[in-house]
Length: 197
Length: 174
Image 1 (tube, chains in turn cyan, blue):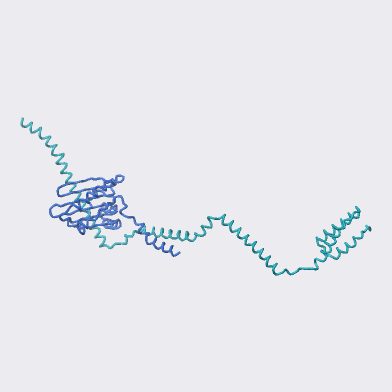
Image 2 (image 1 turned 180 degrees about the vertical axis):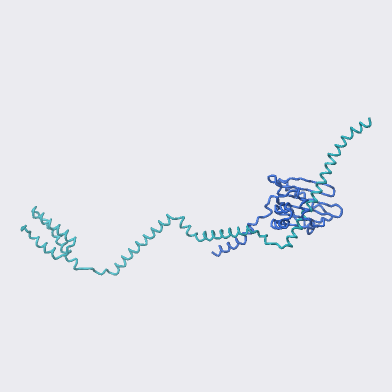
């Protein structure tokens, strides 16, 4: 356990001074394993080790830099990117919605018109039914008007009676002339002949 | 929206006109051309509709048969013209109407062709029920030269005509 390597002290000191971040731990582990390998295989990988040392060094001072104010131009450019991205996303969503709801979109546009028309038809139908149940002309005529109508009806029926009587008379005359008289003649003729003989 | 309100208003106005059944659509209806241009105003012009006949029917409740017969009528239309010397327009109209209604399956039941008198009676039968009657008389006997055109629309029994005339018992001067 006392075989501490010369780089071990530097590393321990570095880890004690720096924050125990994940990057630091990864770098430290890599640095440790590289040093172990170099000592075992007697081969120097100085370049890699020095790069990791630099990285550790940068990592150590990175927190000292802290947060830096972003230049205004960069901030503006970043906002533009964000806005553009949002716009594209919204457009895509709208297009997809329109494509998937073509009928619904048209219906929504004419929904007010259709609703109003339906209401109109309903009102007219209801009022029509009301009017149908109470005919337009059935507005309670006066007694004088009803008597006048009765008289007109009597006139109409009187003319019908005249026509009927004339027809009946005509039919009777026709039957008498065309049927009754020839029949009587045909019956009487043999009788007359019989009498004469 | 304004257009819709206008449409609604018009529909409400026109609805009763559209709903009231036109008498000319009835099976027993026959159109007589107007002879006013030839003979002047008709001597008698009667147009009784179903509602008025309904009231007359209620007025004759004492005689059930008469009341029932009148209640079955849908319209009674009479046109009587004084012909004067020229009876040709009336004869032409009679011929035209007879020709038209024969095409519509009206049945001629009486046809009288006397020198001074022409009578045509047609009936419209539907399922053995008479729902239309047309009587046309052209009479130029003596002093009464008149043309009579009668159209009864609705169910009617000819056998009851005289009875109804007696039941109505009104002096008509005929």
